[in-house]
Image (cartoon, rainbow, N blue to C red; front, side, top):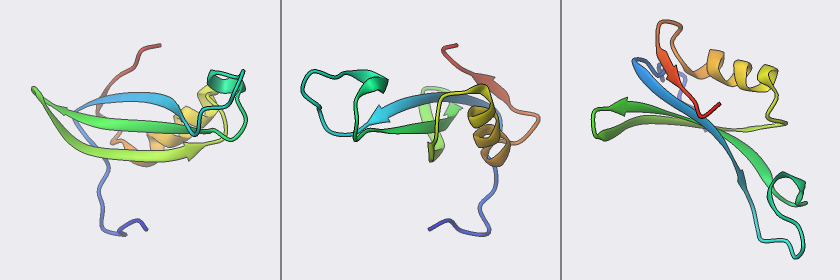
Amino acid sequence: MVLSTRTKLQGIIEVDEVMIGGKATGKRGRGAEGKSLIAVAVEVKGRKTGRVRISKISDASSESLKEFIETNIKQSSAIITDG
């Protein structure tokens, strides 16, 4: 459940995606069945972690990630990715 009063993340934000799910025999990474692709955004607060946003996404395309970012991160923020 999402609070209607929650605000978007702001400042320096680290964004990445991760596969979550059980270990499938003979299959690894994105090719394995039964796994979900999750987008994660974390506020960077010096050496600490700030607020976090997590959402299941359909794929790792730029469109899916852009939608996640626009929904969860304030426009003036600096975004750090591994890509």
